[in-house]
Length: 149
Image 1: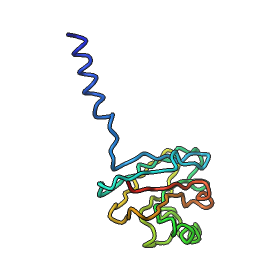
Image 2: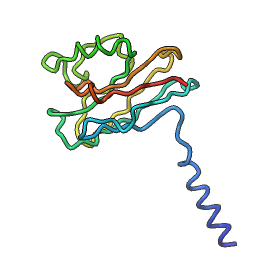
Image 3: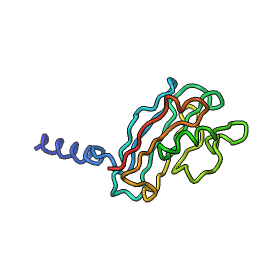
Image 4: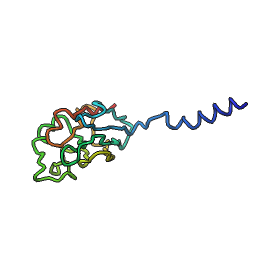
């Protein structure tokens, strides 16, 4: 009886943690200028999708902070050409406001986190999307694909 009780208690404690939300994912940016994943899949049944982003780097925000920008792949080059930390603050990801940006986070420093919320109604299943870091020069390696499923 004790074994059954132990099993059931363990089962019901672990069960809620065994299913990841289909409408969110965890993403980290590290000291090596890498995201923890290069692909994010969004379930088309979600109305909102959250990228729970954490900067695990040890480099100070001013010298190498990270963020997440979500855009169409076809807008990527146009947007990276607008990155200017001398004009646009880190709170805006060093970017001007643009309707080409689907979602974004500010530049964040070591051990900081930010939830990037994506309005899924702005996405189309046939379009290619990317997520990338807009800290100057980081987008060359900190870029991934975002796919509607």
